Length: 113
Image (cartoon, rainbow, N blue to C red):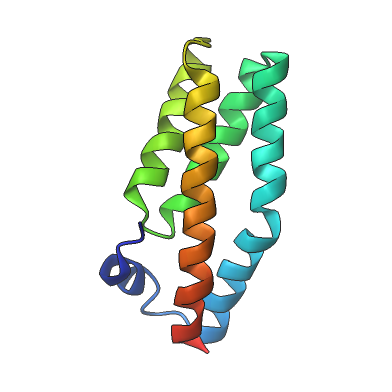
């Protein structure tokens, strides 16, 4: 869930058009990011998983969504330690949280139009 107050503080100095563009970029690429992460898990490609989970965490951090940030951080840590225990369940939770984030961003975007 997005902390809307912190979100607006994070983007306070940007024009509304820039905020919309940042949101749109994420909306356009999140599915590919999740697919890459799923592929990394399936292939037990821990280096790729670490890179992709860490990258997703950084992008999501911009949107001030602590639960989704924590899930991506946990996946990043598991990849770092090459621990596959519970990884698929963690990914499912991350995917659900990311999809909720997408819904929230689509709604929040209206505040900047």
